Image 1: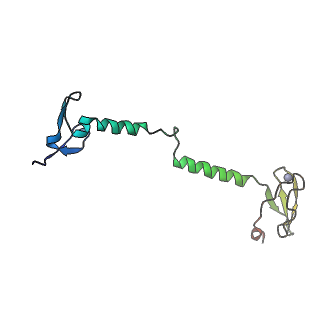
Image 2: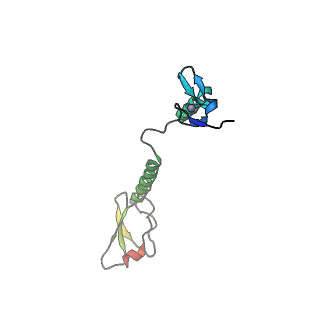
Image 3: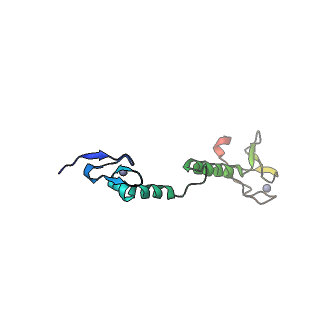
Amino acid sequence: MNGVRAKCRVCGDEALADQFKLHHDLRQMVCPSCFTGKTEQKKAKKEAVPPKPAGWDAEDDYLEKAARMRNREDVRGTFKKIPGTAQVQYTCLCSYAFKYDPFRKIPKTCPYCNQEIPRLKTFSLL
Ligand SMILES: [Zn+2]
Ligand SMILES: [Zn+2]
């Protein structure tokens, strides 16, 4: 038997030369896959995969998550050192400012809006 392989000019795949057949529509010798329409089916299947939203990929997903994390970080007031004391001034998101003891963690919440005071890294004050 001859095992000569030939390259199909339609799909570029190799197949046994004696399996090539003349395709009526393509008007040339094609491999068995092309002849039976398998190549076309494969192509159709690939195109059937639902496209992702325009411009959306894994990186965007990551960036969006990172942005959300950043936003969460921003949802807090600001600490300001009060010179000469161990206390800080905390300005709450409600823009109420008050003294805060970062060592005893008092008060626990904003006396004005009752919002929790974020944890302050005390070593940054020393
Ligand atoms: Zn082919
Ligand atoms: Zn507040």
